[in-house]
Image (tube, rainbow, N blue to C red; front, side):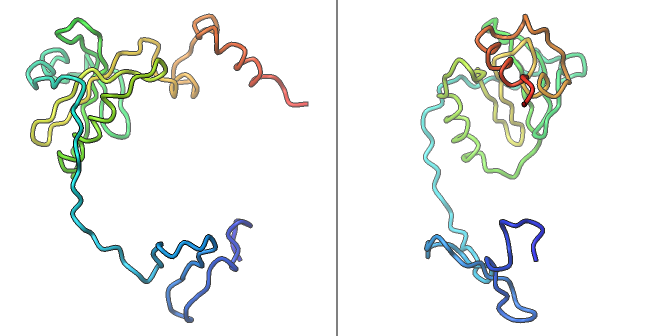
Length: 179
């Protein structure tokens, strides 16, 4: 019996007493893999669209972040550390130095290409990038009020008056007690 009622034993059958579980495909999709099958890894070609932001030299990044020193450090996430710096263009930037990864450069650049073309007033803009061997950096528009995650989880306090006025009705509704 399962701990979750949505995953009861009728969704899974044991092939034998010591055999693997095999999932029934209730959706009828015969293209899925069973637990006893293995996916064959084929090299995939990645088509890279033009990247809509400039590459930034390693020397410039080291210069504007004090060689990625602790004075410029403004945060740390699951994929790397974030530093504050001002680009040569004069724009303040959150410089995210990514931890080392086994992801091929071509795949990484394809993702940079997609993000570089993403333009929305509710998303911080990618201003530039750097790929130099295992060194990978993304430069985003600097958000002086911090991240939404920090605000929502109490890492950074914010006055109600600082919030976007269009959010106030939503926040008032969400904080109304349930009757």
